[in-house]
Each structure stands twice: as C-alpha cells, then as structure tokens.
Length: 333
Image 1 (cartoon, rainbow, N blue to C red):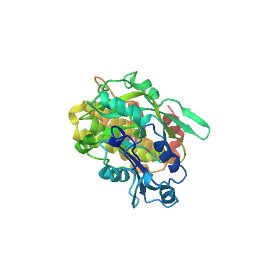
Image 2 (tube, rainbow, N blue to C red):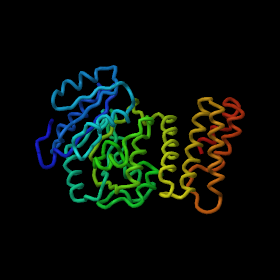
Image 3 (cartoon, helix red, strand yellow):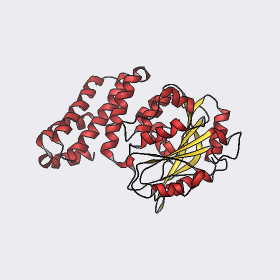
Image 4 (cartoon, rainbow, N blue to C red):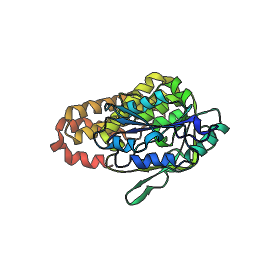
C-alpha cells in the first residue's frame, strides 16, 4: 500500500499491465509514486513476460501489488487487476507511458465536483527518443469533431463520437468501479481496440467527460501493439459488429453500416497487400454489401469512397502482381 491521504488517495487503484516491459516499466511506476496525491494501491500485472519484467517489479517491493499470470493479452491483465482492486476509482497506465505528477489529484477534484460523470479522461502528448511528436492527442481528434470533447460538462453524443473515432486514451482514464461492474470488463478475446469496446459500453449507460490539460505522456516506439494495422482493423470490425448488436438504437442503421463499409474496405486492401487474395475478396464483398444496404440516398457516414470498395473486388480476383499497378494509385487517393 502506498496511500498517504485517507480522504482522497485511498479511493484510487492504479492498474498497470506489463508484458516484456523491462525497458520502461520502472519509469511508469515511478511516475505514479511521484503523484502529489498517492493512490491506495498500484497493481502491476506481469502478463507472462520472458524478460526481466519480474525483477523490475520486485525492486519496488511493497510499493506495488504484484500479480503474475500466463500471457493472455492486455485485456486479461487489466481485468485481473480490476477484480482485486480495492478502490472505487480505477485508473489505468500502460507500462511504457508516464503520468504528470498532478494527474490523480486533478482528476479526483473533477470527479468530486461532477458526481454524475462515470468516466473521465484527459488529453495527452506523445513522445519518442527525439522529443514530443504530438503535443495534443485530443486537439488532433477535435479536427474531426470540432471543439466538442474537452470541457467541464458531459460530452454530448459520446457513444456516437466514439464509434467514429476513439478520443479516449486509456492511460488518461479515471473510471468509477460501479461503471465497470455495470458495463462489464475488457473483452479478453480482443488484443487490439479492446479499450474502445469498453468505453462504448460505458458510454451507452453513463456520462463521460474529458478534462482540459495534459496529464499523460505516451511513448511512441516500434513495440506499441496499437501500431499493428491488420490487428487493429480486425478489432474495429469486431467492436462495431458487437456494439451494433448490443446497442442498435443508439445510432442510425446507416451509421453502423457506413463505418463497417470503411473498415472492411481498409481491411481488404491490407489483406491484398499481403497477397491474401480470397480474404481480400470477401472483405471487399462485405464492404460493398454494407454500402448497398446503407443506401445511396440521404446522409452517408462513410469516409471511404464507394469506388474503392468496388475496385477491391477485381483487384482481389486478378491477384497482387497483376493488380498492383492499378491498386497502388487507388490506395493512395
């Protein structure tokens, strides 16, 4: 236990999943220990690491609660932490990211002033070995939505916004445990986009807010799982289909179909690039199906032009070598 403030700090459990994280994990834990208000507990889950992650964890002694499990993915690791967490406010931090020293303090203040908010996030910056590469994650998202995310009030139409674009950065989240108990935990079958799936389920039933300010520094490096494009698009398709079945009334049918058409089209071109012709053909057909069922009249929620989906089908039939000369210019449009 690391708590020093019985009124505020004891409410918070911090959950850090770690897989082969020896290089950065110590810095992540230290950024929690340097908070101006310390949490009740820091739960670190070693998800079957094969490097020196366990030794890094042991070096922090009683400052952390250490859990060990076979490799089962980030969702299973976070869920293991949630199940044993004693706090009624839960925060997540990835093993390669950092918090600013006032993150917990400022978020608790916000949550105490806004008891109707179930999940609170904030902005973050991204950095690599050369310095800051993205000064504001949320401001970048607001180029798509407009200035409708950051503020002291619940985000309007948060569920629909999350379907379009994930503006919630997991290491910035503070969520009431009751929201997790009501909405369910992370989907352990997902190894990518699992956070977006949970935020959607929470947004379907609780208010969400995004506070002003940078309270997290996210590290960009070649090991980031979110950079695996095919895995990410597969996850987005799963999340869209799953949440359409769970919450069909929260967005128009054309909205769901438009986004699925985009995802299947993107997925198809990724498969074609890897010379998986028949899987690419199937993805193209599914994309075109959603376009046709969405309808050509009225508002379209698609980002990808319809002709890209149509073009995917003959490209897949012709094969990678023959279609490449035609496919590459289309892909870059």
